Image 1 (cartoon, rainbow, N blue to C red):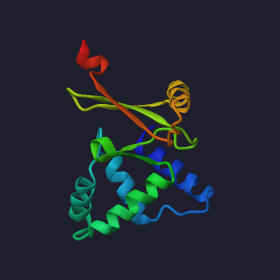
Image 2 (image 1 turned 45 degrees about the vertical axis):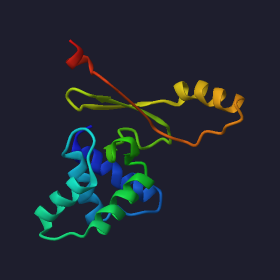
Image 3 (image 1 turned 135 degrees about the vertical axis):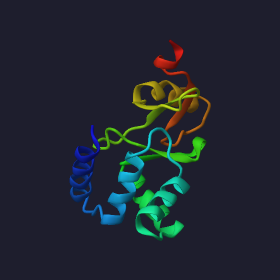
Image 4 (image 1 turned 60 degrees about the vertical axis):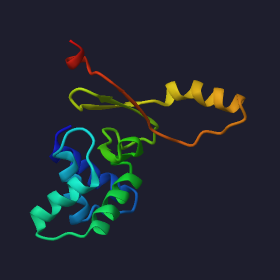
Length: 144
């Protein structure tokens, strides 16, 4: 989905949830959409400061938190960054595939795959929290 289409869909998604994609939140989302792979908060902050002249870290973190809360971004703790969620209209757990060579990131709905892990954990008396699983390797292009 191209950026303008994504942003329009994101605005409708937020409105349907009773929230607003403010100018700042939209700008932060545009900055994340403009980068590839995992985006770090400090990259967004630097880009925002370049565009606006000034921006405080808490402002960026609040905007990123809002975008994660509304399913527009995924926070990838293992990589200390954020990725765009391509299908924010559904609640899901993701398998985040990261190419170690080129940095490409691909998100896949992991509900089916995590079901067997969840069952194994339950059998061991452990309840898994909803999560995104990060796997590193090589993408098809780099493996060729």
